Length: 111
Length: 112
Image (tube, rainbow over all chains, first blue to last red; front, side, top):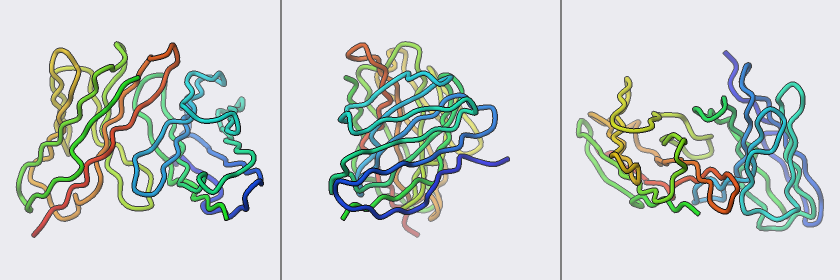
């Protein structure tokens, strides 16, 4: 069975640019969550979508936005990038309140 | 908002049992407690999940007291390959908004 996939694997951007990260959930999973993990820290919750509706939002600025498509894949958009946005961005998929399975992450470097 | 607390690090030796506790003082009533293992530059890997009492699978056990304000991950007979960071994850409905809260992580070092 295919796991959660994320693209791209690595990305380099400059301050002020915009970035879009993509996530494909495990087949049959209707929930997608996004996390930011700064080096040396635990993952921080950004968003959760279930059945294409936003179910939860973490304490991130409005520069961060996401959406979930009819096929349950998801995109995370970050506008006006700051140096501090450099991190590993993790996507996880799951059913309603049950186990989330994580993808390998997208490593974003902002210069 | 839920705050999860874990020990920063633990040391063990091969073959020993390791117990890692996570305190979560405001867990959402209907949410599960999930533990993950993470290696450097990889996504977290699911270990075990539970709601209350005790859950056991082929790799670990999870103990959750009745008040659900903490949980303990038990790894029997650890090996060198268990050296990793371990996180607990809980849901929280604080501020009328659902959030998923990771613990700060426990760095486990298994020595030969």
